Length: 380
Length: 200
Image 1 (cartoon, chains in turn blue, cyan):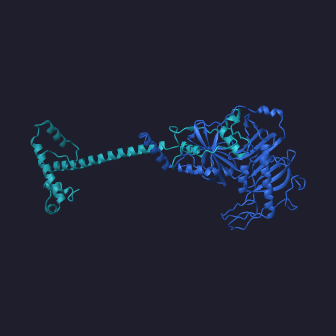
Image 2 (cartoon, helix red, strand yellow; image 1 turned 180 degrees about the vertical axis):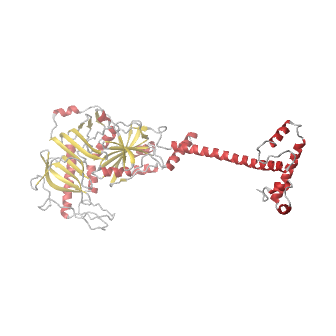
Image 3 (cartoon, rainbow over the protein chains, first blue to last red; image 1 turned 90 degrees about the vertical axis):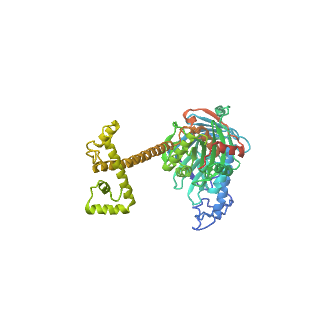
């Protein structure tokens, strides 16, 4: 059970950011739901997402539609602020995984438009280089342009007034699923829109992730922060696919069985490749703008000794878990999943991928005969 | 087994009489199988008489005679003089022995084949388990790389999982994350082949 740190809702009118074209009542109630059997969604908003599955969908009122536009605008500015604004503080991260809750405390220093230095509670220090051009990967609580683009397709964002985090006034943006359940809540610094806190909920209204800044200071960094930077560059280079779908088709031609959409409605939105030491690794990124699952696949089988990993049974298959990472071997391929998603979403995603390397009797015999034949004729 | 069965031996030995003899002859007249068997028995009887005339003249013959006269043998004859019991015994012993040898041979062949099949199947079962370490690389997921890549793409701080080398051995590293993604589909397609996909 994750602890909910204190936060408050301030009454309307106390904030500096005033939404336009709104009625006096800024608190919007439950989103209206279209009758069952409606075939298409009519979104009265700036997005033109349509759903033809026949499942119940949400139709927004004019008020809710304008709320959503304003909320998405706030989040977009927050994404920019997270890169361009200097800040420092202690980030507390708590997340529910398939193997229990995982927590992390990190000291973060971010130079606006420049470096981000992250020091975790274990003592490991990472430095993220930020380049100009708006492509900096450094962000806060997943609020990036790319994530917001996905979020707008899968959720409805609503401005909910103001609150407070760590003594700072913050604008509150709530994110809803199409069935009206609350998916996430963001607190954005009222003055700079730097994200200060994020809560994520599963479809059963359970808090599954809580990220919060404490001891936050926004503005010019203290002089000591620069000492944490390291000049030496390390780490592999990832080559990104211009079309993840094309890569998936190519992999399918080679016999791969990889989904374009993971269970939980997480579409593939990015793919890349890296020469990680002695092996090539393909990285597939699935996200709906809120939940993010990174799937790393490489040929081989898991090593017999895996320090830091714990074996467990997940929905009937044998996997290894370390924090919010899950690994297993399936048909000569090692799958490593790094997930920021509710546990049930992660479990469903694992179930949607090739199974662990435990064939049935027929499969085992078939594989065994293949190997015997290979022994007899290695070149066959 | 002939239709007359054991009566053929009795017929050849002249042990049948009366109605039984008539019936046997009547059957023999119309049954080719029994005629063949009767003919074989008569030939055997003649050969036994020949063996009896050479009594004592040859060591091999002596051993054969000894075998015939061995106590406890089923239907063992009293003397190698072509009496019905000796013919019957030899006739009974020779045919079943040939059949038994053929049957035994078949059993041996089938047993050997079964052993081979079971052995190969067991070997296949044993080798068909989880992927062996023989021809596939042993992978330890590089979480220190994967956690960072995940954080960069998701827009969050790198989470140091317990298996992450940075968590187990605190280090200072700089993340070489290119700000502008390099699009190279050809390289990615080569990577897809290099990773070694297997057809289902």
